[in-house]
Amino acid sequence: MAYNKLYAPPPVPAGVHYQDDEPLGHLPAAQTQAPPATNGGLVLKTECEFPALGRSASYDKFTVLVHAKAPADVASAPLDLVTVLDVSGSMEGQKVELLKKAVCFVIDQLGPDDRLSMVSFSMEATRLTPLARMTDAGKASAKLAVGYIVVRWTGTNISEGLRVGAQVLADRRYKNAVASMILLSDGGDTFKPKGPGQDLVPHLFRQAATRPAPIHTFGFGADNDAAAMHAIAEATGGTFSFIENQAAIQDSFAHCIGGLLSVAVQEARIAVTCLHRGVRIQEVKSDCYGSHVDADGRTASIQVGELYDDEERRFLVLVYVPRARPAESVTRLLKVTCAYRVAATGQAAQTAAPAAIIQRPLELTDDMAPPSMEVEKERVRLEATQDIAAARVAADGGQHAGAARILESRLKAVEKLSATGACESLKEELQDLSARVGDRREYQQTGRARLLAGMSSHAQQRASASSSTAKAPRAYLTPKM
Image 1: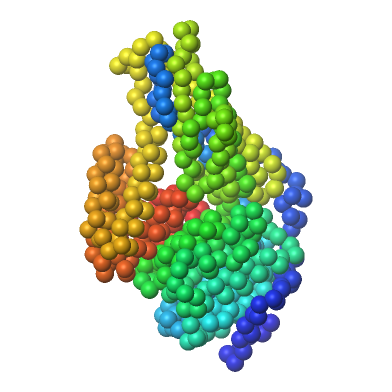
Image 2: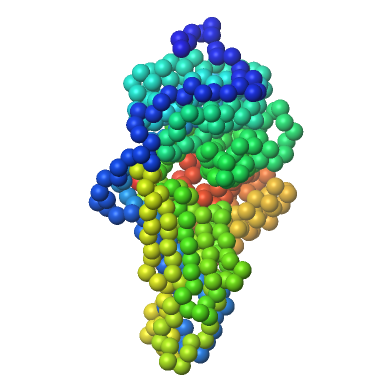
């Protein structure tokens, strides 16, 4: 379609369906033949909080760390991407020009097997381009459409933008292995009463079973509705990123796209089974990832989903360990396996960790191996995540001094562990957040958004694409992000 300055695609009325996505330039993953593996698959490990327990002792909520890591430098899977872009009046000037530049950068990163559709919204939503392959011709057409994006002073209807973006994904005739939606907005929805951001999520995206893709949200500048943007991402399995420094929008997009273009593992599901007849699973700490413990405590599962190239997930499994029998020198606690699908080929795979075991000496001695630092690091991270959420509640309630005290107290505990070389990025994050919550004005401008971006990143165990004027390290970053 040709674009000119006097033409913009018409708004999309409800009930319209798209069935014009460009055919794939390759066979779907399920129909491809997998090449021989050269660098292995997903790696699964376990680590016990103590290497040994006295033979006569039982232990309640003994912690076992389950660690999953995706393979590195594997073939990438093609992507279907929909960008939903705010073009309301507040985006006028430098903001919209930075946005255009960033979107053109995204277009350049996509390959000929990736497909892109762009949606813009103000009061109404417009599909700027159909879902098309990013061949040289496809990129030229997409960039032409970007060049004619115009700001409209008619309000901000995030819900409508998401509806149209969702329709593009739902109506696909062909499907790439990976799909995602990116939402960018610098304000709040002016067409719906202010409330839970989940209300803005299209119905199709509200259930994991029917959701065609996660929605990764970007709050652009100090006036974005960070609570709504975080809620949209949280409800759909995406991440929320806060672009504090507007000039860094391209870098923020680069981190997100780098991850989406490096999905290595899909539909990963971890299964945990007790080995010793007296061992029982009491609890699984799995952040936002769905987990289930069977009624008898003998088995549990964790729904992990997608992993980027070289990306990691850590979960804590709490078990009851009974007293050992008189002649029992070793207790076999857990068997842990993971079934998953290789994203690039669609082939099913499975891996298993060595059994989680502990020694059972008659008496514990001083020369026993020390407690696991990896288990302690994960426990501290989870506690810090809870405190970040508590600080947000306190600050939203006007208790800014109380919010700062929560974070400063947690910071002292983290600093003790940081002295050993662990949790350095968490320490820096808590220092940054505590400086932003104590003052009401600073909290409203940047603190709330930074807290929510941190909560999103920790819940997903995935790097946020947030930018900041502060120099702070980024947790969970993978080589290709």
